[in-house]
Length: 86
Image (tube, rainbow, N blue to C red; front, side):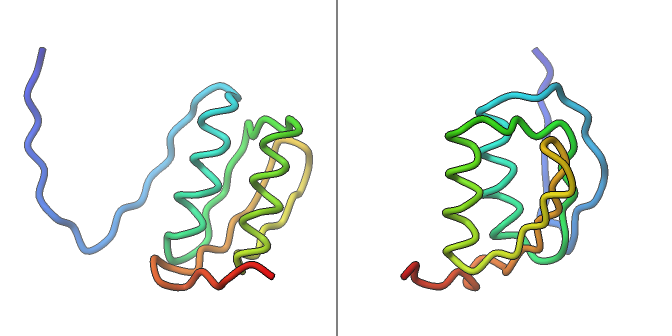
């Protein structure tokens, strides 16, 4: 197994292609929601529980555009930008 060493970075960008998956869809919403800036997710699995996570992130103040069942844009609010759900 290879070893990897990482160092803090001021920013990260790139693209990752993975098949639609429930766990990845949940994580993409949560991680993109606490990131700053806009994240584009294609291959989002629009299952009932993933859509519930999407609604929960919206309730916490994250703006999410669902362009199609499998394509979402998540406008992250930053690590401390979430608000209390009402």
